[in-house]
Amino acid sequence: MSLKNYLESIRGKTIAVIGIGISNTPLIELLLDAGFSVTACDKRERNQFDPALLADLAGKGCRLVLGPDYLEHLNQDLIFRTPGLHPRYLEKARQRGSQITSEMEVFFEVCPCPIIAVTGSDGKTTTTTIISQLLSAAGRKVYVGGNIGHPLLAEADTMSSDGVAVLELSSFQLMTMERSPQIAVLTNLAPNHLDIHTDMAEYVAAKERIFRFQTSVDKLVCNWDNDITRELSRKAPSKVFYFTRKAEPSLGAFLWEDAIWMRNDAGVRMVLPLSEIRLPGIHNVENYMAAIAAVDGLVEDEAIRVFARNFGGVEHRIEFVRELRGVRWYNDAIASSPSRTAACLNSFRQKVILLAGGKDKGVSYRDLGPLINDHVKSLILCGATAKVIRESVEQAENYASLPITEVPDWAQAVQRAAAIAQSGDVVVMSPASTSFDMFPNFMEKGKYFKEQVNALV
Image (cartoon, rainbow, N blue to C red; front, top):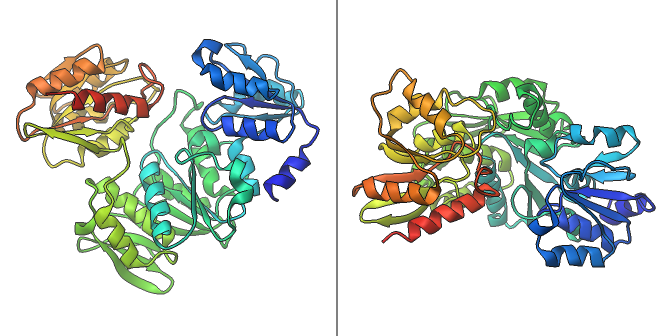
C-alpha cells in the first residue's frame, strides 16, 4: 500500500496525535495538509513550546490539547501514539473504540523498499549507522530513520523501491508493531527502561517483535554471546545469522586470528582485520560483526575495509572531544545504562577519570561497582543516581578506597576532573543513567559537556 492509498483508507476519521515532538510533528503536518481533522496532544504546557510551532499548527486547523490532562478525553477514531508513551495509558480510549497506531507502524505498512531494522539495549545507533553507510558506499539509496535520521513516513511516496530503509527501533516503538523488517538485527539485551516497562519480560517481548512477524525468506542477525538474545533466536521464523566473539556459528560473523570472518551458505571468508577498525573498544568490534552479517551479500568486503579505516564513530558515543595538556577527554553521553558504561570502561586500556550519574530508571548498579573499582582511578558523580552508583562501588568486594567526589552540576564535574587530571590521563563522561534529571535528552547533556570541556584553558 502506498502512503496516498493509506491516507485515503482513513479518510473521514477523526485523528489524535500524542506528542508534538521530533517524530510526530511531520506526521501532524502531513495529516493537516491532507485535510484531516487533527487533535495534537502533549503533556507539556504551552509556555514550553516554540510559539511559532504552535501558531503554525493552529493556523492549519489543528486543535491543541496541552498540559497534564492531555490524555483525559481522547475519543478520536484513530490515535497515533508517541514512542515514549506506554500503550496502557491509551487503554481507556481503546476500550471506547479508538484504533491505536504509530508513525512507525504506518511506515512499515507503506514503505516501498526493503527495511533493515536494528534494536537492542546497546549498540543500536552505531550498528545502524555502520549498516546505512556501508550500503551507501555500495551505491544503494539509503533512507535512515527511527531513533536516528528523521521521520520517514511523510516522504514514503517519494522513496525509491530499489533503495533500503535502515531503522533504529526502540522497545517503545516495537511493543505494538505487527510487522517485521526483511532484515532484523538484535544487538544484545540487558535490563533497561524498567522505569517505563512493566517488567523485564515486557521489555524482552517488545524487542522480540523485531523478528516475530518475519517469514522464512527473511533474516535475523542475533548476538550469540548474549544469553537472552540467543534464547530468543530459537523463536525466529526466519533464517538466523549470529555474531559472536566466543564461538564459531554455522551462519554468521565471528572472530578468529584478530579478524572478523563471515560464514554463509557459500562458505567462510575473512572480511575485516581488527587492525583496520578505527573505533575503540571490543563492543565496536561486535557492532561491526552485526553490521557485516546484516549486509552480507549486499556490500563488497573491500568497501567494508575502506569504511572501517575511516569511520570515527557517532557523536556522543565515546566521542573524542579534545586533548588539553596531555589529557584526553571523551563524551559518552549515550551511556544511559550501566551496561553501556561498562562497555565504555572496557574500551580503554588504562584506568580513567569517570564522570557519571543522572536519572534513575529502575535498573541495578550492582555489577557496575566492581568494574568501576577495576577501571577507574577517580570517580566524579552528579545527579539523582550519584548515591546508588557510589553504594555499588563502596559495597563491592574489590573496593579499595577509590576517590569519589559528588558535585551538584556537570560544570563543576568538569572543573573537578580538570583539577585532578594529569598528562596521560583519560577523562570520560559516561553517565550509566538517563539524562532527564537535568537535560531533555542525552544529546543536550553531551553537547553541554563538550561546551564545558572546550571552554577549559
